[in-house]
Image 1 (cartoon, rainbow, N blue to C red):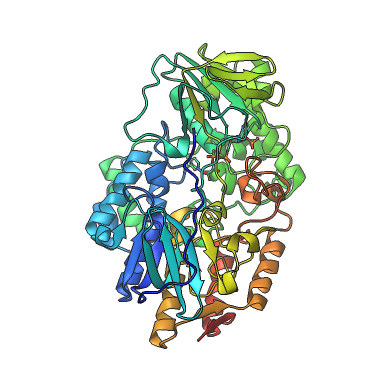
Image 2: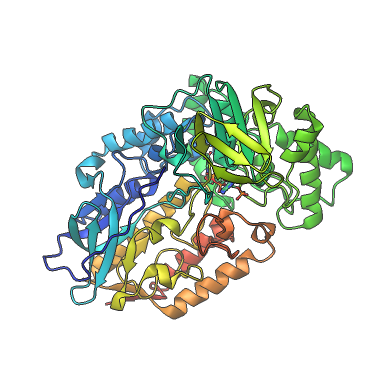
Length: 547
Ligand code: NAP
């Protein structure tokens, strides 16, 4: 199987008139809101979307079990009171179909589709200094010219298949979770393999284990996971949530990751054993990321505090998995709790008690080859009807690398970032004028919609400022970029997550060049990020040159 990755050439210099004030790439959560704001600014805006409909992540990731693990009522757009009043969430952690419906509801309401061209894959974007514009080429040969280019291409959108021999040869059905067929796949009674046990793999396993005849889970690195505790939202509860939206949103703005969960002010080391145990128990029994982001303040920075929560969750896994040898394999040994992105699960661990589910530790028995009929490990061959690749993404910069982006003098962004990204606040890159990124590398990261709204607002205000002054060229300076880079590195200091391989530290063993651990996001939290961004604006966009 392939993900259809191709290379394309684009014309470096456009010839026609500049047709668009702004082209936004991507009609996902951030692209849709960016369109709303740019339209409001009176800019002639076009959105180019690779998919056939709106939704981005929530359009592509339609695998069995896909759902939010942020509270639905915090992952909302906050810009429209009408949307807040009219939309009803049915579950605290909505499933993918509901979220996709939500994004379509918003798109209908604001008639977004009139500004979007679907099935439009941008393969190259070249800056032309002469005309101060960007020339875009699409995979089908179409070309566009725009003054400003805004990328809203997501952080987890470039799906990666495993670099295992024979991926192309399997004759059964095989799918990457982020390219799941719209018509669905009937896995009832089938012999199914899942490769990958990140947040996606966990959701797939717990769902497919209910229907597959035999499910074999190929795990390379065990991941910590904790219960989601999802439940339905009653009409009365939804009414209360609606009334509380201002408070909920205000709370999200105050927490580091923009969730409703804020760290407890105590250290895990300053309370008694009984108090600590009771607190961990309470967090483990509550919905959402409280166990991760609402825990003692030091579990993600202090080794001993982290060991205590890791031991607690390991005990829970042992209680939930009947076979101690399987439980042992499911307990991570090479990283502490919460130092990678925490999957939230619903009876994931119990799935391994079922007779139709087998766990294969590929560190013990590595996969040698995917054959025409299954998967061969060093221990033997697994005959299969279907293989599900829950093998993740070329995260954060992958979607940029997939487009041949060239700035002043034909400088390639991919080459520029070959030793890791450098940006100004995740919004701008020196040498790439008039390109703005929504949720770019080294920006803040957490509850996606909360951060995306902030990002799109910042981009809009900058473009509004430029427009009001008749500016046709906007670029950051190398000095401002380096200052931000150093701030990003300083803010990451001490976080245990930076000592661990994960997409958050830029590691993807299936992609060449993604083997050095680096911070790929700003680790200082939303309030700090907002403060820095606000200051830049207050100081007349210090670090940005308008011409
Ligand atoms: P991921 O966290 O990167 O996990 C990929 C998995 O595939 C890992 O277990 C990895 O093992 C394994 N893998 C990759 N290549 C392999 C190979 N060649 N052989 C064996 N195993 C291989 O990707 P993801 O699970 O798709 O999640 C990515 C992110 O998407 C999450 O962290 C989260 O932010 C987001 N997400 C969100 C939700 C939600 O609820 N909202 C749901 C799903 C995902 P190693 O760990 O050993 O590399």
